Image (tube, rainbow, N blue to C red; front, top):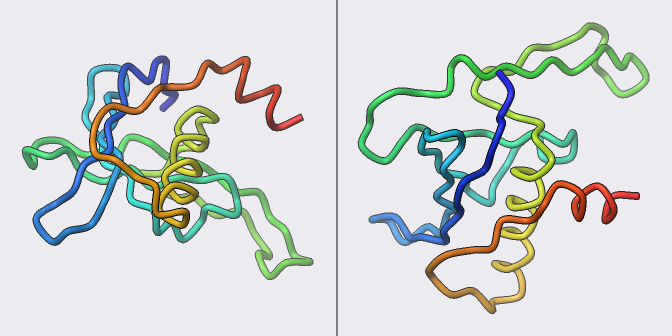
Length: 120
């Protein structure tokens, strides 16, 4: 499934004290934490909504085979996205937490053109 619009992003803290980004993706609520197992592959895990309803099981990303790096066949990952804006926001979360300069509250959602320019 493709994300059409990241409507909003907000830095929040859960009951355990962990910081995360609360995202509105096409009207669906997702949580993105800084620890991402497949981040180096450009993938971001979309955690379940805050109220416990729904999931992102309809989101799948396929990483192609890469035998040279230990992936002999393509692999499918559920509840992940490779959306560039979501990836940039997740990267910003990681950088913010490393620097220690974080503040709870709204986060500016970057424009796709800016993200593409930054990647080039």
